[in-house]
Amino acid sequence: MIAWLANPHGPCRPVRFAHAVVISDERKIFEGLIDLETSKIFKWEQLHGAQPIITPDELVSVEHGCRKDLKTIRYDERFGSSRGLQQELMYYRPDVDNNQYQYRLNFCLIWDPVTEEVITIDMPKVRRPQVKSRPLDYHHLAIGWEGEYRKDLKPINITQPQGVSFKLAGRELEWQNWKFHIGFNYREGLVFNDIAFNNKGNVRPIFYSMSVAEMGVPYGNPEFPHQGKHAFDLGEYGGGYLTNSLALGCDSKRSIYYLAPYFPTLLVPSVSMRRMTVFTAGNYEYAIAWVFHQDGTMPPDRKLTGILNIYVLNAAEDTHGWVSEVHKGVNAHNHQHLFCLHINPNLDGANNSVHMIDTVPSDAPVGSPENFYSNAFYAKRPILTRPHGHGRL
Ligand SMILES: [Cu+2]
Image 1: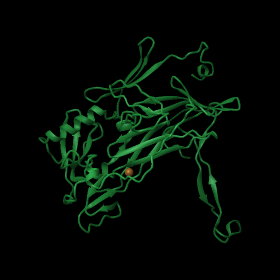
Image 2: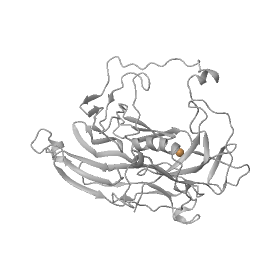
Image 3: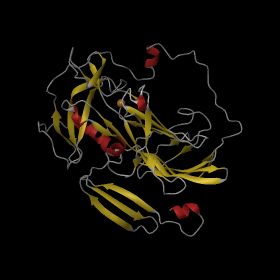
Image 4: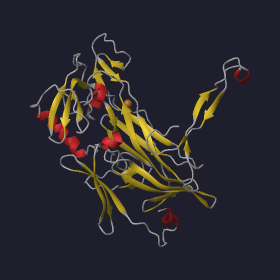
């Protein structure tokens, strides 16, 4: 691949393979490599001890199924790890235009996506009352009822009368000495390949590929049934599948260029050429922006917005510090959003490594000659040596 990138018109064009992850009706998972030129299956194997992504179709089916299937209710403890079960957080919505995350119910369902049935209702030991606040209306006309749109903002017009400064050839973009290929897949969403910077005529490769590979959200409330609340938004739902389609004039102003990704299904979101994707994972929206600066740096920018995943709270309840009360009778569980970058460095070639920087206080005690005033700190630079597992050494 490296040889072909160096000479795209030369003879060493690599064979094109498709990497397929296939989920059977029984949710068995198969992984394969298919030669796209000969349609020959190069590798095909069933994976054991792993769970596949929850597809958009399955997410729709669980919403309908949970409403109608309440026939098999039992209070079983846990079910082992061989089945991919889903814990469904339940809400009450008085009207279709109301905020669907406002009234959390105090129980959860466990759904089996293979048999398409509810296998358990998890009731907490402590019951808590339903919140009785006024429903928040999300219909656009409701803004009129709440006092109208603001009228004191002057219009903003962004114009580029001489056109844009970037060039796009296929999926390869050039801008201000940067050059890279823009890929997209169901799991990671945007993937940048072959990122290079032209430094006064010297084209320097920087990254072979770069993407956000996962985003984990651990929740910190140990009380049953919240202990299993721990989302992997990319691996479980797919950052590409959840990417929102954008429209000119609605989501962006002029001089935006849209790219359409390809999926083996009918879902076709488009990606804004500000090198940004916005995907919605349940109650959250994530804006993943890749900013390529003119000085050759590219700090990733992650924005989160949305609605807190809330739960109900008794009056004067001791929350043990696991939650924050955000409204009378409503709490939000402590949680984090941990982004996992897939970095394949290629700075002037493959022979380089990635390190992180930790700021560490001096080991020398206060009053010692080395650190008399206690202001000494240094930068620790551990190298990330392994791509899998516990890389931090
Ligand atoms: Cu959050």
